[in-house]
Length: 135
Image (tube, rainbow, N blue to C red):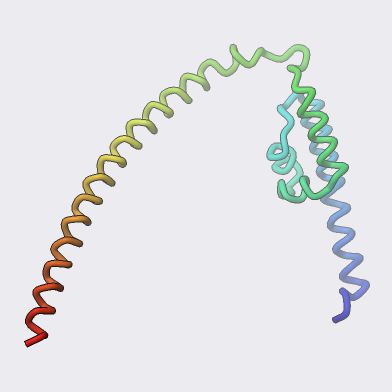
């Protein structure tokens, strides 16, 4: 089996290099604007997959280094003040999710009980049918 033709190899390399450059540009833009640095944010800004970023050791190291700094840039609003409405929304949604989970668990328990009953009836009917077929 032969490898890719040269023109396809060059095109693939070119696309990869362009994606790597977009990733570097996106990362520097996020840093410059004081945005949180993580693989998802860089991938979205660069138009690449997170898998692409994880597979490129240099990009991965850069993102991890910036993510580790994690400090709030000067002049930005502290997370607690800016995120207070977000955190209350998260609490409300969390409470709603918990209620829905409990409701679903109750429904699942009822359905399991009904299934047990149906399986029991099915078994009884099979046994009756087996007795009639033996004759």
